[in-house]
Length: 209
Image (tube, rainbow, N blue to C red; front, top):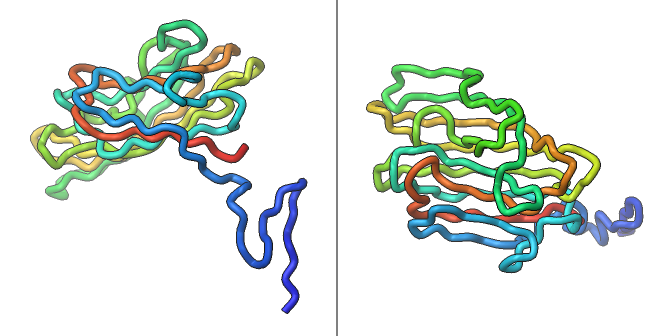
């Protein structure tokens, strides 16, 4: 039969029936593995980390984040200096369902919003990550065009975790916002509000090119 290539703006999307991964593909950049770690930091130009105009989108994947103490999982952004204190405005909501089926909810959590704040943003917001051996958090966060010196830098996260506050709860949390700076974001740091990241992985990917 006759099979043709499909090309868009110079990029081959389909060739001989096969879909090309060139457009929108995920390129693994760096994996950090926690071991009683106070912080996990991705800094452009350090330890093979790329966080510049090479990619328009950067995705961080959180895999089995286990906390050493009852606390929230947090993120901060660096805008050129040594501190992860880029000014942020954010919004937060979550859904949960209790293991014993006694309650469910979907709610905006204004107490977790930031308004022009340099504080770290909580990515888990409805109770703390459970400390049992089998309890953890997983999810992802996308950071858009961090190297722009024209626009604010948008980010969005989704995290699912087990919160053990007397009754075991499955929680899905959504955070979105922007770093309200025109300076490039050149570093991203994750940590717990108190204690350490006992174990787990955070993987960084670049999207497209």
